[in-house]
Image 1 (cartoon, rainbow, N blue to C red):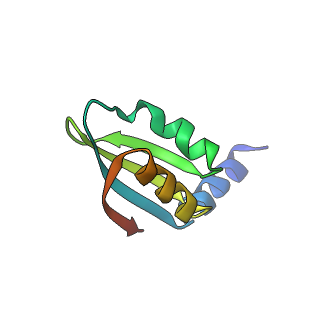
Image 2: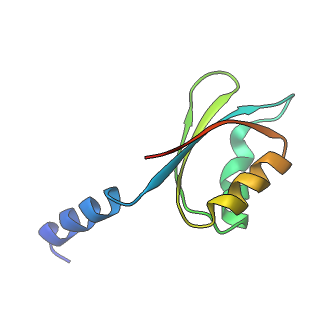
Image 3: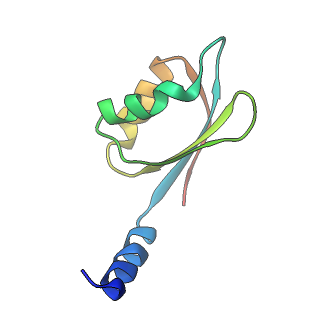
Length: 85
């Protein structure tokens, strides 16, 4: 693949819809288990950003978003907001 094709491919990927899920970690938990949780539900994890001590922003593709959000809530995380970008 040449460099031009790679750049065009990246632009196409950047244009895909993305969910930003802002959540709070409860109790003594941590965000370390989130990537495995998303993978278990066959979600599309794009990025994980720590915003504050207990606040995390997870960037997800649209694939299986309902299953991923339900699993995150069941694992004890508080969903503060879900934003489609």
